Image (cartoon, rainbow, N blue to C red; front, side, top):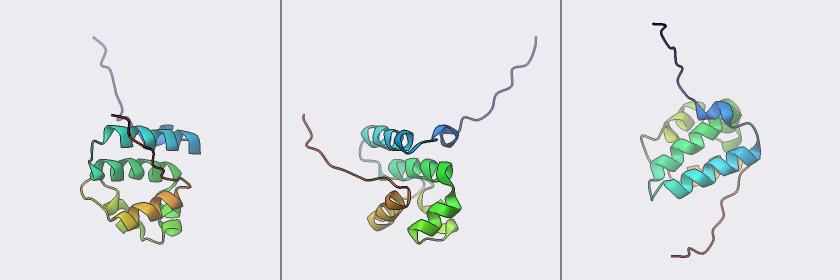
Length: 99
C-alpha cells in the first residue's frame, strides 16, 4: 500500500487579497464567542500572509512582540489590536445584534 503524505494546512497561504483577509477576520470574529486570543490568532494569520516584518513596522511594534501578541497564547491589549488592524489595512465595524 502506498503511503499518503500530507502537509500542514496554513490559512495564511490562502489569504491573498484584502477582501479575503477581511472575510476571514469577519468569520473568525463570528466564531470566536468572546475569545480574544482566538481573534488575535486570526490577526496573526493575516499578518503572516501580508508579511510580519512589514506589519510590525507599520504598527510601530517589534517583530518579536507582534509574534507574541498574535500567537493566540495571550490576549493583547486593545490598543495593540487597533494598531495591527490599521497596519493590515482593515477596519473594524459594529452593527446591532439581532437576537
